[in-house]
Image 1 (cartoon, one colour):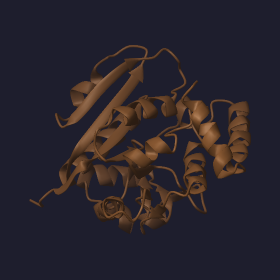
Image 2: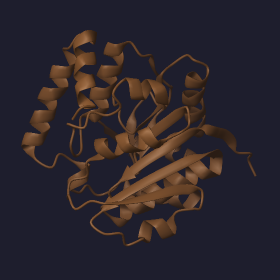
Image 3: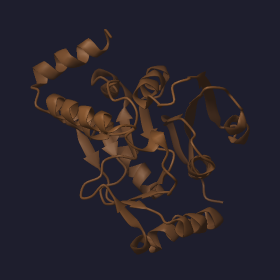
Length: 261
């Protein structure tokens, strides 16, 4: 049995609104991948109108689970992310979608860049974000071997070309807090990944990416996996561009105002 890699200075944070069995399966496979390869911390926050305890029963004991009752059909992920980051205690935190995988070596490299003081934020991939077909997803579930994904890349569909930035990242927690964490105006799905990177760069934080691809375990898309209205997409794009045009001083003033709302 391969010895687990020590990532006890890292907390993987998942905030979830489970829309389908596919998404539950994907999340459980991702957590299995992390607990198989790493000694680390995993915190999962689930929101729903009521707690059926299904996900809680399925999670391994290594996962810290929190349920929050929320009657809003739109999942306000940025709000719950901020809540989790503030409560985390490790020097490194990782925001991770429930459906994505990368080679474990990419995770190790991304963490080491922060540990060694070479970066404040890192992405565990620099190549393509690839959406598995249902057939390739099933093959991975059967084998639990990421090489199955690697050798079947040509069968997958590319997501958000030419330079995808979503899916997951690692952060020095103190830098993340100082940068404003997540902008809670971004309500529902979309646009927050690009906004936060623009903000880090304006503030002068070091953001580095690790060579390799990211694999998205395909699933049906509900209201919380796409823009829930056309106007929401338009509003977010305008806001993203407004923030991107700010100077460092203007952005610092803006971010300070977020903590007062």
